[in-house]
Image (cartoon, rainbow, N blue to C red; front, side, top):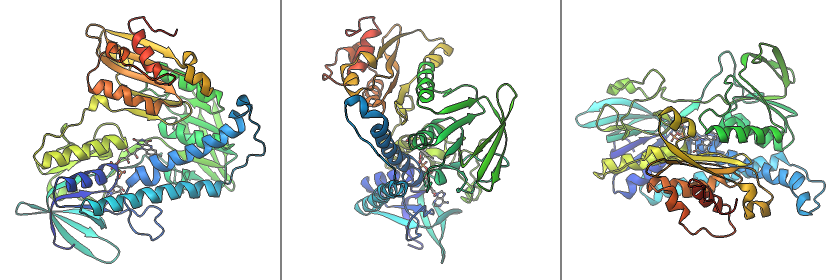
Length: 479
Ligand code: FAD
């Protein structure tokens, strides 16, 4: 590939980068996508998929599915009159299955790269200035350093776990997301530092498999960016399932011990707590990853929080350099990164390209799941916006009763004057799927009346979305 010239060079093959490369190929642009990280590739070669496919969304959901199945067999079957005794976990096999899912997905990307004529370059990329109209990208692998040239560059270098000061991650006892997805034994006691989305999902996996899980967080507010009703319902449900929470704490130290570690902190009342555990997972958020890119070689700088500054179309201060995904502002979500990748390639190809940042769904894949799109009630109140709310509980939904999963609700917020839907918030075992209808409603600027007038199949969980929409005008039919 040395000295080759491309219309588009994408740095990073995660959710943002690999989708951008495929879209560029579809649009007839010559494109290379560069990836440095081999993750757990058995050949030790860089592989595509980034955080999401290798050590994030996909492996965590594979383990959530396995642990949910086990939990259902142990605790969920009896109420259906099914006797299932002596269920046991083979953790090795569970982790192998997760790895097989990841491998299948990453191989799928390599196939898609070939199909769309994307050159997949396994190397570390570094920006190396400009020659004429072309940007120079230096590629280094174990054996050589070469150069390629680009008319346009898309930086999709992603993010890395935020470090807890003074704590060394060994990914054996004290883990980030990478080690947390590869435990070889079920820890008797597990402490998760960070009660956010990743902490809750990983905590659910190991709690279901039998660990005693304590989540600690320096914030006293649980899920502060979720609608307050969602946060309240989720805290109630997670606590009922056996997850322990200590919120508003001050973490003092995490000390490795011969058999695990001791987590020391002050609780919200100032009382000193020493928690002996076998494993610790640090999940206190993620920060943009830009080290080694040599941004200064082309005159780019990161902002005070480490992000690459971009406009609403992901263009940096340089017209032919774009940045997308976790390395730029906005929610650190795989689908947001992918949408930005598509938008940028369409712009490069001379098309319109857009991302509607007001209609990006959020999901927490616990049990029940929580999902939302648009504004929360707190956001609307803070903005002084007049709104109406409709709510419908799953305890009044026939399908949920049949499933035996009646926790949660659908809540719809609509503009008081125009009735336009401003936010939809769902807590339910299938919230991640139901949020699709709500996202479509926001994208098409639907009113709550529009949703209320759509025929919903019966019996389904998403009838609750229609009922919540009807409740905005106080005319839900089944409650
Ligand atoms: P990444 O996926 O991080 O990809 C960036 C890639 O660039 C990496 O592979 C990196 O090696 C490569 N790279 C960086 N610098 C260079 C260089 N100089 N040269 C070559 N390559 C380079 N999001 C969701 O939407 N849903 C979920 O359910 C979800 N679950 C998650 C669970 C966990 C445990 C974690 C950690 C994250 C989860 N996320 C989830 C977040 C999601 O993974 C990220 O938002 C998404 O991966 C961001 O995509 P990206 O392309 O910006 O970056």
